[in-house]
Structure formats: C-alpha cells, structure tokens
Length: 213
Image (cartoon, rainbow, N blue to C red; front, top):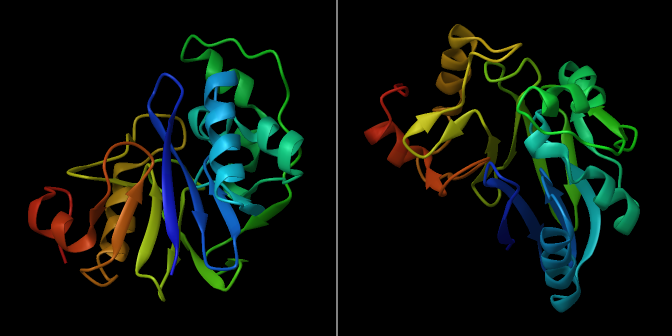
C-alpha cells in the first residue's frame, strides 16, 4: 500500500507529491518548491517518516512543476524523469518563468531519463505506467499504478476541470483525446492533479463537463 503526501508549492499552489510504500522508498512527483520554507517542509517530512527518495518524476515541463528540481538534486541526488517532448521546455524554464513575471537566478539539473507512452517507472515494490496525455503541453504524461488504482495527472485533469490549452504546445483537440483515454481507467481510480483537490475518474465522469466515455 502506498502513502501520499501533498505539499502545495509556489505562488500557483502547485501540488508536489511524496509517495512511499512499505519499503520506505519514495517517489517525488512535480517538485515546484520555491524557497526555504517549502524546501524545509519537504525535507522534514521525509526525515520524520524515515523515507528514502529514489525516484523523481515530472508530469510536464511548466516552470511551476519543475522549479524545485535543483533542490531535489542537491539534497537527494535525483535527476528528473520527464517526457522527451517536454525536455526542451524543461531546459528553457527560465524563459517560461519569465513569461509569468518571475525571474529565476539558478539552473536546473540535467534530465536523468526521458520517457514515452507505455514506459514504466518503479520505486520500492510499486510500478507506475507512463500514459502520454498531450494537450496541456506536448509532453504531458500521467503516472498510473494499476495495483493501487492511483493516477498522478499533472495539469491534464483537475477536479471539475482540465488544464489550460492556450499556452505554447497546448491543444484543446489533443487534451480531449487524452481525457477520453483516461476515462478508460477504472471509475475507482484516485486522481491526484497538479493543482487543487484529489478526485476519482468516476466522480469526474459524473460531474466534469469535459469528460465522457
């Protein structure tokens, strides 16, 4: 069984997740930590629970989801896993941040691994499948664990809504196609989005105007 801790980061209330299982190994998802307060909270939680971070994954390359990557590399020695289609965006994150009025004076670590649809990432005794879900960005992916019925959806699917498609690389047509693919997951699948509250596939099918089967 996995445990999931949500840490809201930066001025966009981005959800960073710390995911562990019985082995005490853990995966960090989308670290958008900005500043000492958020970094200290993450470090203290991991230390308090006796966890060992062994995997760091990104759902996409927008700055608010990746700006804590230097912190993760410096403290835990982990380089990010990201879709190859968002690799260039990751490398140009200062420009992305600047478009939102934020100046960043540090560089991010090099990418550790690029993934594509159908690939797998593992930590502890758990395996997550990579599902390519373009639309919010060309390289948006979902990390899905069938054993636990859990999906980390980034900015593709929110509770009651979906991610923006008006940013560079976005496409309403593509995100609708991606959402239709996600609706094939079991209704009980727990959805942990990049912003906002968790939900389930079944709840979104019943209430989210962008979803149908």
